Length: 395
Ligand code: ASP
Image 1 (cartoon, protein in one colour):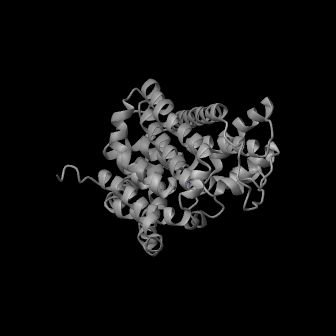
Image 2: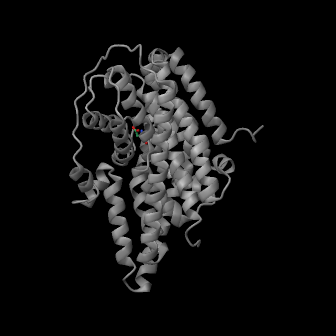
Image 3: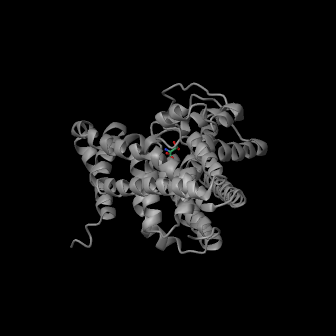
């Protein structure tokens, strides 16, 4: 019996029970939200020290700037490949199903945000490292950790080894705390899912079922065909076996709709169960949770095409090409928190020249679809970590 009472299975039960509970007892579900909030707070508490220590240890472990360049180029290359394939999948499924002929009227009006490339680039550089730490901005922290580690390659070996040992200890302790928090996952996800269902309801999902189907189907195809193909042909490992080892992280991403909050558990599972080296997991997972968002990019492309349908706009080839490019690249700037892609969506709509008010229509189902896309975001990072592991020297 206890063989079946694993955290993974209990998490699955938590998700299902949470859904039913939120539907039947919405008020109670709202009152119990605090359990989910505590769980997320515990995970978030680990993110910054873990990201800093993990990236530092990984880069010092690579041992030379040459290797770091190679690893960095391979990581970014793999991310761009998988994200652009995700967008292609989204656009293809959208062409085939083509939802949006009978649409509900828009409810909320959303303000456009302009895409300022300069701001995006500037967000990488921390003008105040502690401010970045305090506000949970991972990208500038990663930037500093890489720089710090590179500088450490040039100090005496004795000092470098001391620093490495210290941050290795920090990294290991954070991962250990993460594995304790993981045990609370079933209760945490129960509360989160119950609250989401109580608040959002399922009615909107039924009304927009064709659109929701497109998103979920395309995400599923990417997760079960494209990513496994990359795992098999580039990473040379068995994706199904790997999934069974790391699925806790994917379930957690699904429940929390936050790639960032999932980082500690992704690293814990990838290293302890999935056999991914510290160097690869420490570098690829924090970076991936921040900039590699296959599910989000796919979702954005479908949302934009759906809004074009709602507005009765026939997209030209060049507009479709623009959607492909903007969805791939803006997903890099999306934060790993719930609902973050909506801001980027307003940017893309502005660039393509589509009306913004239709975002109100898709907002009603956004949280539920966010769960699916975040699960794919994290699954993509986990596949990347194991794939790139093949190309670096193991400890
Ligand atoms: N919730 C997503 C994530 O954390 C981002 C988004 O698409 O809104 O990965």
